[in-house]
Image (tube, rainbow, N blue to C red; front, side, top):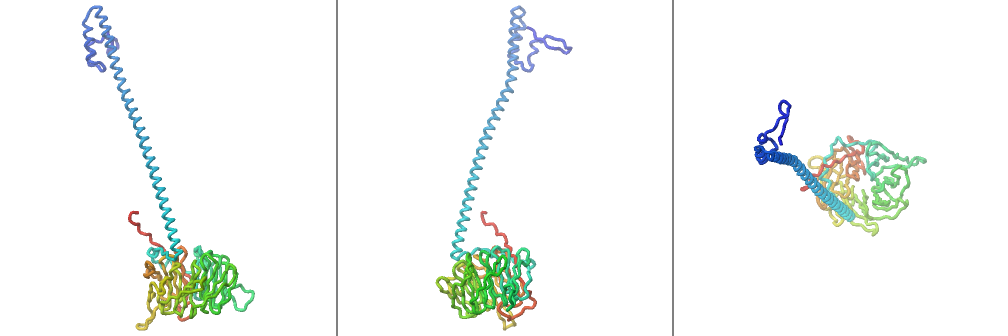
Length: 486
């Protein structure tokens, strides 16, 4: 059998067997029998040729099949590789999913642990608060206020004597020697309501005070406002509308201190008549009177317990009154008239006196835990120096932050040491005049000062350059440095 191929001219030409060797797809061991078959000239040789040619064709086709199988194998291998990659991908995704589940469970466990820590911390704080031993550390975070940021609210004609802040920190009530009470908006600084002075003997006039208002208190639910004056009267107002509700009479001298028991409508009052009285405002009723001080009482404060604390003025004592037992604890420490007092928590309090000292007290000891003498420095000529009177004190509830006021042209912020056994000065806030009242907001983000040209209880000095005003002092906290490992 002869093999033909198309020549250069386009005609078919015979292919010699030896010329097939070396062509692509043709093996050397195939060409040998073909060549042997070509050299036989008989018919059997032709048959051999044809057979040899058939073999040759089969071998050629076999090689071509081999060529076609090679890419198929490669495709199969690639398919296998692709299939293995998919399996590996599935395995990887499964591992990733398991890792995500594990991470989510760990995060949930951390969240649960954090919540448990938060709950435990809150419960611990509640227990410490009930025991009166809670002392949160906030003083070290307080930054010295910029005097330019202090907002001054003017509306009273005479010296501010007292002020209170509503429990929601949205409004301030201020009272003054001009016998008026003004309700201010904290946000805008505008007057929301003015309770004018009541004229003596005038009928049909709106209810109000006809003498210096010396003290105020607001209930912890913000419903009732109480105010006391030199005319021995206690007036009860609806705090929201400033509508007069009741008038309590019973004191025989100027009412100098008022405080609501937190969480109730029980009102404690004290007076220059040296007594402490208990009232039920919700029922418009008098409860009882307690005696013990030897001189006019200057100030009073109370928290959640059924007791109150008083500053005894010239008798030089601080007293804790246990109402149910009708008993009292007496504390000594100041050398002058104790004019101001406030509870820090249920077990500790701070007081200020006209000998220039500030004292920290614990109910378990009858002497001060810490006593800062000349807290606002000295005044007067060389050799005749006298300390500046401490006319007001304030404490941020359940913290270590305390503020004091005098007529030394500044309000001072203090940090209470651990266990309230130390008092360290933080900063001075410049304010000219007598600082007759100080109050921290519930959140501790601002401090309100009542400034006057005169002391709230008298006219010993007059600072002409002072302005009778309510000053809102913003308190900014520096971010705490990150703890190790956080």
